[in-house]
View 1 (tube, one colour):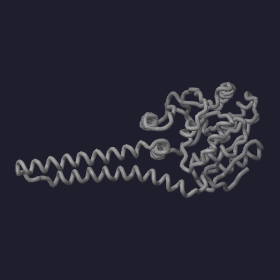
View 2 (view 1 turned 180 degrees about the horizontal axis):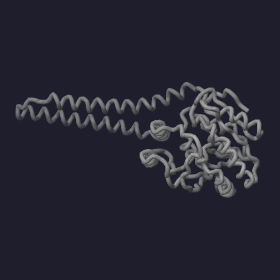
View 3 (view 1 turned 90 degrees about the vertical axis):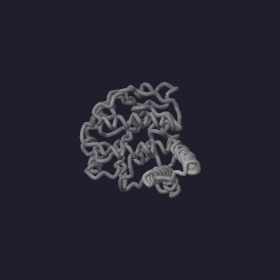
View 4 (view 1 turned 45 degrees about the vertical axis):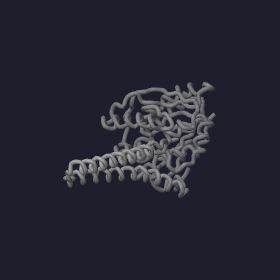
Length: 306
């Protein structure tokens, strides 16, 4: 039996040796052959050279190097495609996903009723408060309006059976949100909880705006509720405008009171214009997704492989 360990990397030259050292301790506790698949997602530091050296020292360490930065979602998909193991796990190189948990995860997945053992953080200690607040808000929104229910604090770090991985690979969409895809394919998943672990070295490549954009993509990919909201906002605006117009006409006929209202007129115009642009922006987001899907471009391009 083989375990494939998929590790997306972007500027992780400092963490890769530390990750492999920790995994070496775990390997001795697993009755599995372990292969490593590092995905170099267009790193700008010495990540690729570190991976080349690791491959020379250990033939079970493999890597894919993209021609440019395609994003973590593309790296995960590439890793899943190349994985050959009976079990597959996705991990970060920065050791925020504790390798020692793999032992318990393997024990749990031996239950024939369990197809996936995921992990979730019960705390966000060490994260900026605003990032933690927005993360909690994201899960509340997506679970309220989305097609799938995502677990708050769930990580990409999980151990999956080959059957589940094959099902995920059947989803070949260009716009990917893997956290949602893990849930969408179904299968029985249990979660192990753990305290948040900070990076062992280096700095995260995720900015607040990047995470915010990623969250919006997650909502759009798994819900059409924003389109419905835009429809309701437009309908409500029309009703309010008709009531206001009727009120002005009746007041003028009965009271002969002219409309005083350059400031009020401008305010109403700006309000309606803002609502229209908001609705167009929501619609444009979905059209943009359709546009990218119809191009049928590859999800990633490999420059070097070993």
